[in-house]
Amino acid sequence: MRQTKWLYLVTFIVTVVFILYTTYANFIYDPEASRFLRHKIDLEHVSLWLTVMNVHIVAACAAMLAGLINFSRRLRERSAKLHRLIGYVYVLSVAIVDLTSGYMAPSSTGGRVNSIAFNFINMIWLVITVIAVVKIRKKKVAEHRRWMIRSYVFVFTNMFTHLITAALHNGFGVDYTLSYTVSVYSTIMLLMLLAELVIRRLNDPVRP
Image (cartoon, rainbow, N blue to C red; front, side, top):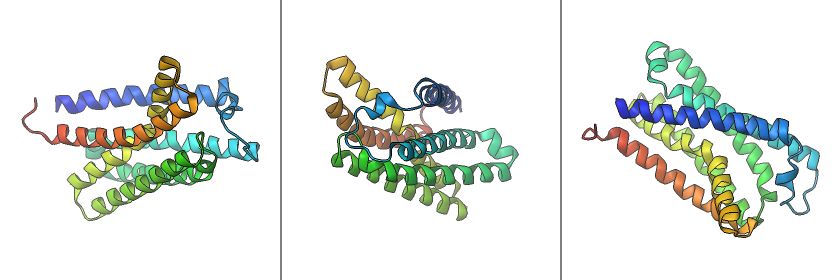
């Protein structure tokens, strides 16, 4: 119980800080995304692309919040209906993130190799989320929770990608495009590994 509360608290802090940072960076500090777009080549329909990106950001933040709230044991115990409603918000947000990401993927920094990676994330995230929904509709609560953990870790794709990119590019002087490509593929593996580690730790009765 204690480690569950600790993990939830850490996730809560990271989520809130990241949402605040993302909101400031994208809607206040650099609403035209000039720093990000300078790494794009031959990007057409910039205005439309920015609109889609903003929808993507809002949906991603909504998914982060909805998922975080629904992992609250207190909410689940006090209001199953509210938990279900927020769950629908999460699923809808994931679908919107996937659709907007699909639109932006062809213009990914690094070209086709990263476009493929982002499309893979879109597909696997949606499939995992649907599996989580199917499990709870079959009343398999424990399995639903495990699949929701696997789904939720993908809300941190952007955060991990940019952290790894910054570490490689700013910390070690690696070319930005190469740093970004390495970070995208590393993020996929790290998030999937993180989900399994969290599931194993929460399900291990031996640990204090």
